[in-house]
Length: 328
Ligand code: NDP
Ligand code: GDR
Image 1 (cartoon, rainbow, N blue to C red):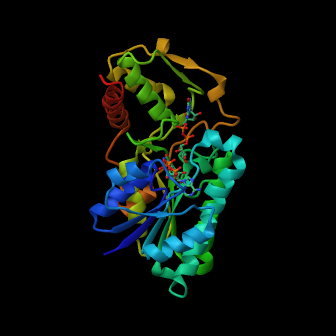
Image 2 (cartoon, helix red, strand yellow):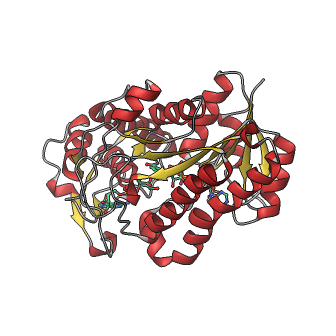
């Protein structure tokens, strides 16, 4: 039975990846941080087969201990401070977790593997946020990185450290440059979920409007359930490598609003959407659109859910969830 260790098990991707690996017969371990993490029960209820180990990406010894218990064949490093807006106000801790945390786990894996350097295959959750200021459209594996946030800079550090461990030590370390991916498990701080939850609440009469920041930004949004499949496929290759995972389409926040509001029967969303500079960023990534050709050709990976399908899936989920919460 193959064994996997996932950091970031309480997050959106951690849950989908755990489900995928359990379905394939893996023994799955998840790293959970904190003395009394409030998400522990949710993880135990959602992916009951996962064995939880306590640890933190900033605590090297906890990673060594987790590896010794899990004895993994594959390590998926999904743990990070992942909210871009938060990273300006908390740049130092973002660097520690999202940046140096990658070095900690790479080094822990290297020591754990010893002479048998290919004993453990490693996945790093890199990000389209590393592309930042647009240099090329669409963005591909070779596109110049120009991060525009402390989060993006930390991800660039992790990305190159992963490449460096592969080149220096021969580790089977791959980096997935994933573009935005969403789902009904997305955190409420991210724009898609903020919109779909608000639309559901507006429809149910629980909220009057939603306040957003920059409506002009464009993103290449896919479904998280599709994207974890690409992570797994990367670790099944003979050679480790880096891959862009994206849909190849871009959409504006306006299009997100169109689909979400229309789905609940509201054709004109303007009266329900306010803007506040509070939600604007000191520097913006204006346009993201990925070129997933390499992932298509080498991994045989294809996305299954399109953008309207994704948004309506999230609105439908939030209509149910918000009605339950309100006892409706
Ligand atoms: P989430 O924000 O949903 O999950 C992040 C996870 O990291 C949580 O489990 C969180 O734990 C954990 N974490 C935070 N701090 C630490 C720490 N100090 N030590 C260990 N774990 C920690 O992110 P997603 O699931 O959406 O994303 C997964 C990964 O992919 C992240 O690295 C993200 O940066 C990256 N990524 C995501 C994309 C997306 O569109 N979703 C696109 C590209 C990359 P806790 O619950 O305890 O806070
Ligand atoms: P992003 O996702 O920064 O791309 O990072 P987010 O959903 O936060 O922002 C997307 C775009 O929407 C604009 N926006 C708003 N964003 C939020 N959160 N809230 C608002 O009210 C709002 N109004 C407009 C933003 O300015 C931005 O342009 C996500 C994370 O998952 C990262 O971890 C990951 O690496 C990248 O995607 C790829």
